[in-house]
Structure formats: C-alpha cells, structure tokens
Picture: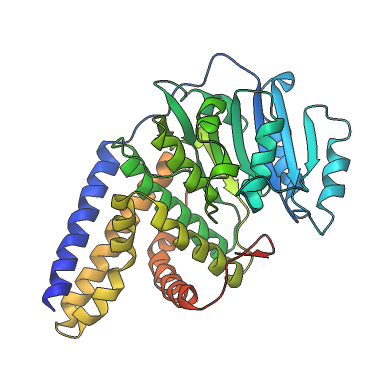
Length: 363
C-alpha cells in the first residue's frame, strides 16, 4: 500500500506540474517563412488505394508555388491498385513523380528504405515527409519552413485523427493528449521525438546522419531519425498550431489499432529516458490504483479517479483550444474509460508472441 501511496503522490505531482506548464509555457508558432525555396515532399506508399487520392488532393491544394514543389512518391511493391490510382492522378501534373522501389539500401527496410531512395532522388535542400493517409493544411509548407532558424535541423507538426464515429473521435483525442504531453516537454527545450507523418528535415541534417540506409532498423523509423539528428548537434522544433495540423486516417478496427500501439510501445524505448519514464508513469496509473483500492475507502478511490479525470479533461480541452478543435465535454470525460480499456488490451497484446503487422508486412 505504501508503494501505491508514493506512486499516487508522484503521479499527481508530475501531472500538476505538466498542467501548469501547459497553461503557462505554450509557445506561439513561428511566423510563416517569407522566402519560398524549392522543397521536396516525400511519401512512402504501400497498398494505399483507399487513402492516396485524398492525400494527393490536399497536396494539390497547398498554397505554395507549384514550380517550387517536388512531390516524390515511392511505391513499396503495392499489391492493390495504388500505383494505378497514383499514375492516373499525376499524369498531367509535372510536380509529381512516382518511383517504384525495388532494391534495398543498406540496413533500411520498409518505409525507411523507401525514404532512403526518395532522398537520393530529391533535388531540394528541404525534405517534407508525410504519409499516404494524411491530409495537410494549405499553409503547411511555409508554416513549417518558418521554424528553420538557430541551427534547427528537424521540425515536427501536430497530427490528429479524422472521423466522426465515437471510436474515431477517441483515437483523435488520444493522439492530441499524447502529443500535447510531448509538446510540454519539447517547450522546455528538451528533445522528445518526431512524427513521421508530419515532418520537415533539412538535407544537411539528414545527410549528416548517414541516411536511413546507415541506421539500425526500427519499426519507429521516425524516432530513430530524430535521435540521429539531435546526436549530430542539430536543433529541433515541435510546432503545436493549427497551421501545421495534419489529419490522419483512423485505425479502421481494433486489431489494426492494437498493432499500431504495439509498434509505438516498441518505439518508446528509443525516446529520451525522461519522456519514457513520464509515459510509463502516466500509463501505469491503474496498475497502482487498483491495489490501492483494496486497502482504502471507496470515497478515497472515487476521489482520486475523479481528480485524474478532471485534470486530464482540463489538459485535453486546453490542447484542443490551441488547435481550434472542439469536442463535447462528455466525450473528453468518457475518454478515460477508453484509455482504461485500450491500455489493458494493449498490454496483453504486447505480451503475446505476435509480430507487428505494418503495411501488410510483419516485423
């Protein structure tokens, strides 16, 4: 019981500090870049026929000179109609180019291998990396470029989930909550991580790492790249603003969601120790909460639960305000029950001797 009490004090102390920092230390997004250099948008695709058109539509709507855009798509041996959809879409658009990836570069696999090929094809000094199921805001490019100062080599935007069903909305809230926690740490100028679906990395920073072909393989290739860039002495910036808010397609079902979270859990060990510790403390709340409930009154147990829900709801609602998003308060409150359920089944799934299924491959 004493261990549980100590844990509760630690949890609430950390969370209260995070909440205060979230309210007081929010950094405004940098001003959009005034210059408009040539940029390369790199997209790895594999079996994306259901989402790639929406992604390409969003890119076509970018408020950036067409002649300064180089959009490179790498088809990673798709077995559906992805390639047909892409070729039909880009046949009259000179700024788009699709490359079929047939060879392996160095240690790179999967998405990392595709990106390794695309960076060698790119002709600009700025690599914008996103995914085939992402929709980007019109001013994404210049808003991201605006953060390139003071030796910054890698910039991360904010991503959430699109969709109106309750399952999709809870996924969106989950993303906003997790990325908000990371943003609080990033605002303290501590390295955290990046998002491989909403990223800008300079050619100089990328090439300084040796590229994906010279990195040990990881199912969270974006985290691996971020670590390598920071290790080489480049600065980083995480932008939490609607101007760089990307929207990702949701996990369509529970099995896909579990594989996604298992992949993320493998990546947590590649985060800085302080971020890994914080996420573990946050996720392990109920591991200590349930035993604590056996040795105390239900009033205390209920009070602690309500306090957690209140603080968490306040935190998420503030994050949504920064992003100009709005969800009913009851969904933010009931999100806690989604967290309990998903955390439990994720832990069980993580312990199963099952490989991560990602883009119809297993790792």
